[in-house]
Amino acid sequence: MSAPSTASALPRYFLCTLLCLSSGLGWAQSPTQANAASNATNERAPTPTPAVTLGPVEARLKKTFEERDNFKVESVIKTPYLGLYEVRVGNEIFYTDDKGEQFIIGEIIDAKRRVNLTQQRIAELQRIKFSDLPLELAVKNVRGNGKQVIAVFEDPNCGYCKRFQKTLSKLDNLTVYTFLIGILAPDSRDKAQSILCAKDRNKVHLAWMLDGTTPPATKCEGAFTKSMELARKLGVESTPTLYFADGRRVAGAIPQNELEKILAELK
Image 1 (cartoon, rainbow, N blue to C red):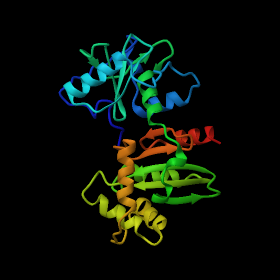
Image 2: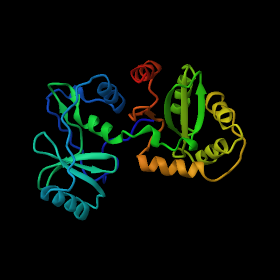
Image 3: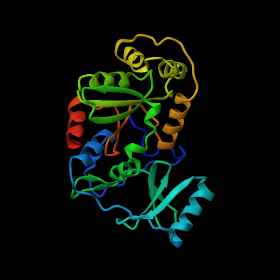
């Protein structure tokens, strides 16, 4: 499944407006394309610089959006473009003027450098420290020497996840950590628990994802609940969602050539 849109956490009654620094709307990208574009270049767009404490304008905007619109605002930061302020709600951002009277839900494009500034900023906010992941919760699959690593958030009923597992099966020298969550179907939880509670959960997991062999019904507490809590904390709302060794996050079942390109960058 694709990643959620930038506006998914915001009330539906607000109209989405796309702001571009170019008249060429053809530069708007999907999340996967934007991730690939950002990773393919060393050029970095100017990004907002968080302040230790909120200034008077930022504090006023935070209060306005929390009290007037019932948003849970994580941060308000002055951007280096168009006098706009970036407002973060969960793992998503929108832009506003210094009075909070108008705001924009959409993406800002740097026309000169062909950079999607919004997607680049979201990617920075979503980046994690890989070693902070509770890997003991995941199904671990070591291929070859297992030198490189990837973490995958996956629903057992996700067709794209099954496709991606087939892609992973073609690679060598990789350790795959799969965090099983249940967000797609009523029986996703039961299937995830059956896999996580199995004596050889890697074998049972691959048998289901690659061959369609239904996991024996078993239940246990712990790993599934904690994986769901982790997904909520990270804002994972679609599967598969991938994390690489450098902490970057990519949404979707990316093709093998794109996966190999990212892994090659990290060697």
